[in-house]
Length: 279
Image (cartoon, rainbow, N blue to C red; front, top):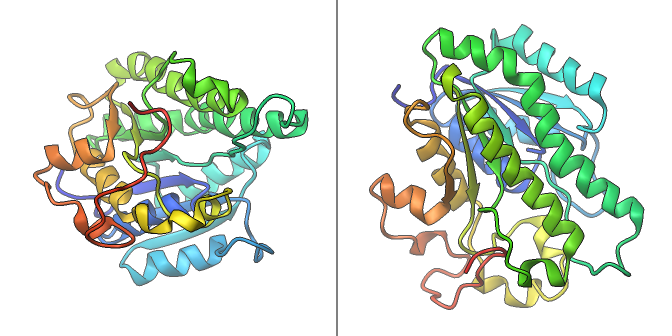
C-alpha cells in the first residue's frame, strides 16, 4: 500500500513532540489522525494541546480528530476508540507514543510517580492495543495493512540502564515486551507490531525540561527524524515487517535515506547525544 492516504491512525499522547511529528507526517499523505491525549487546555509549562495538534494535522493535509483522553481511564479510552471509528470508519494504525518519564533513583522516586510511569507506559500501551485490536483485525481483513508502532527501545538486561533510574527503565522495558508478545500473538492476524527508538536524544518540550539537556540542545535531533522513520515502517507490508525493534536511523537506511544531517538541531553537529538504552 503506497503511503498513508485514507488510512486512520490512533496516536496516544500526540499533542506535542514525537507523537505530533508522526501525526503530521502521516497527514502529509492525507491520513486521518485521532489524537488521544490529556492536554485539552493549555499546559502551564508545556506547549500544545490536542486542538493545536489538530490544526497542524489539518494544515499538513490530513483529517484530525482531537480527543481528550487519559489512558489510565479505561472507559475514556474505549470512548476515544469508538469516536474514532465512528468518525473515520475504522483504525488502521495504532501509535503507542504516550509515555511518562522520571530519571530518578529509588529514593527520589515517589510511589505516585512510579505508578504514573507504570500506568501510562506499560498499562497504557497494553490497554490501547487491546482497545484498538478488533478494528486492527478488521483492517487486516480489508487488506488495509494494519500496524501497531510503539515508541520503545530494544529490550535490555544491561544493569547500567537500570542503576540510575530503575523505575523508568522497567516502565520502558514493559512497553518493549508488549511489542515482543503482541507481534507473535497477532502475526497470524496480519497485524504488524514493531518498536521504534531514536539513536540520539530528541529535542522535545518534555526533554528540554530534564536537568542539563537545555545546555546541550545543539547535540540533539528534531522529532522529524523519528516521524520519517515511523512513516517508513508504517508503509511496509505488516506480514513481512513485524516483531522488530527499529532504531530511527536503521528504518530510514532501509528506506534509502543515508544523510541524517538535516535532522540535527544544529545542522552539521557530529557530537550528537546518544539516547538511553543503546550501546
